[in-house]
Length: 158
Image 1: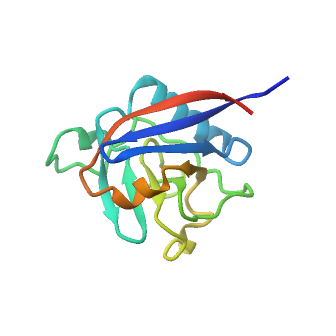
Image 2 (image 1 turned 30 degrees about the vertical axis):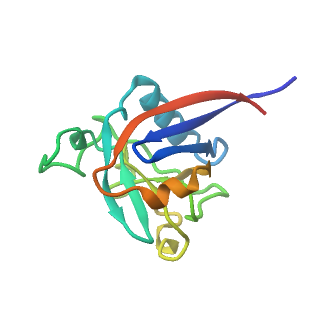
Image 3 (image 1 turned 180 degrees about the vertical axis):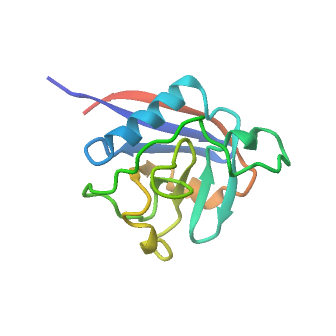
């Protein structure tokens, strides 16, 4: 009897990143991301913030319109709680984590880490909720303004 596990494919203009979720460590954050992805919230948004050797960040609804001065400040219209007590709260290469403007203010914006080099200060401040396991090279190719074509949630057998 195989368990069905959900994974995600982040389709970008530079390729596809495949993501495994930390269901045990950040169940609420994972559920929120899956809900938004399945609603098509992320389709057509952009990576609005790219800092070399640090992170690529996306998920702001204002990034749909080029040059919108509010880019980086948007969300889904509600906030979710941080989940910082799990085992996997370690920002390493390929880890996806929630962006926020202070504790419990996250919603739809996320970032993916380039490397461990500059991210230790984020541990247990931002909720890690998954990790890219395929397409890691895409992270390095993303530039500011690159498109998130769609995020597809996939049911896979474990």
